Image (tube, rainbow, N blue to C red; front, side, top):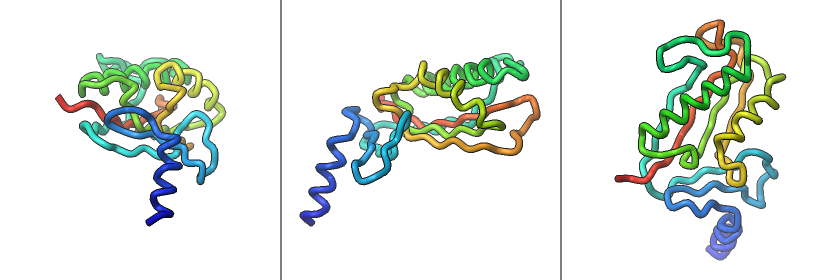
Length: 150
């Protein structure tokens, strides 16, 4: 019991001060840069956002063969989705990103960092895949958010 209380106190040193969730980088885990190791829901409404690709609201492809333009549109779609659920990008606790080519990781980070809270970033996973569901898409990103219940 004492060990668990001590561990809980260590985790609390690294947690978010959000009302609905905690984003953690425990001292007992590898240091992470640009993402949190753990996201814990403490209240609110959990919102799962399907993988978003570079389509505008009319269904047109944005940025054919242009990774930066595509990832920008993807983050705009994610923003619209979390806002439709009653939140904003500060409520995003997890991002799963699927790339055709990891050589674009720096561009991804530059665009992503305009949307997320870089001081308390969401938990994150990035995976290189052989293809997405249509050949013109270079990236797909899904998200989980926790928004205040109304």
